[in-house]
Length: 511
Image (tube, rainbow, N blue to C red):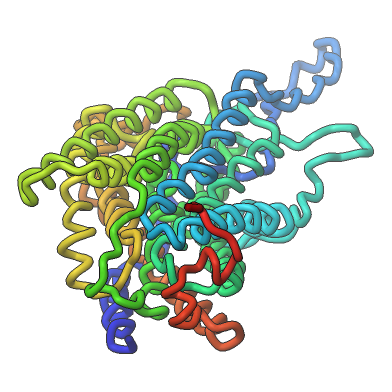
């Protein structure tokens, strides 16, 4: 095991060796560059007159201050529905997808882990997570202005705070933004449990999630997604000054529409580290560990696909054109990945499988996540086709090379698909390939500067490398601490009997 960990660290160190360069405080990236923005709405800027009025002219009445933007009910409703769809992705979607893939004696343990991780992270998010991720302090961590969601409701004024979006003068209620982002944090942590399913202590899973959520997820979300919003950007000087307040990876200009780095790569690396440190399941490679219910897995995958429209389209934060683009890309890329995985499996193994279809769909969803609002539909189609084939290799060839018992192929699908999607975002976001390019908030339109695919892919690679390195380091420390205090793994006899009975005292099926 130490040799595996050493190899893992050596590999990720190579990926990241050139990632830690001085940020280039360029103009703010594309209009929908990230899934999130600052939770504090930027105040409206009152124009300054070019010159004082002539002395003989009558003094005009004092201009009334510009009214603060008001949230549109359509955008608000859209974001609330998107939030519900992301909840659907996790419970029951992810829970059933994972549950069907394990043996029947561990079905309830997986359902319980996903369900409880979701609940735990939502509570932590509202206590301190949201504040650390989405308030201003430095390029790596936010502050504590929103601890316990303080300050969103002002009882003295009788007003609620609003969150900026990616359009000037457009806001949504901050409480909706809090809820939407909370579901992202929750599903990211829940994804991890699939890598070490069927052998981890329940208490250890919860303890690890607290540590990893605090020290891996929150910094990643802040670095990739935090900025102060578009409303204060009026010229090159304000563009540069506002960029200095943003997250470290945002400052570099990385594109991550809905979480290729923050969600999928982040969780996949944590899962892989856990699979290595906890060790292989008893009987792995010698006994049958086939999924006990592909019916459940198919239902779960279908719910994931449906819920993912909220995940991706909702990341536009507005019910507009970019949301529609993300919607169609989520539909098309997922369908393409399903086809390429199934046909690839059909060619190499002789038969198409339901498991392959479900896995291909998830691979397509993962790959299109960072690109959904940036690439054109044909770019999304190509990304989906590539994701199906490459992730098929990820859960077969790459898994054998690594030698870890990643129970439900978290790294093979979410890690490989996330890395592929993040890098290809830099390619297919190019206007010459039908993408959106970079949005310039100074001119409030698409940037007139030429789009460099090579430069953008390099920036994307830096974001990927930073995420891999940080998640791996935090995960190793967190797993080690939990192992010392609680112990990571159940005893062998409990593992053989099944975690449903030994950890929870109940069974998924009777008779």
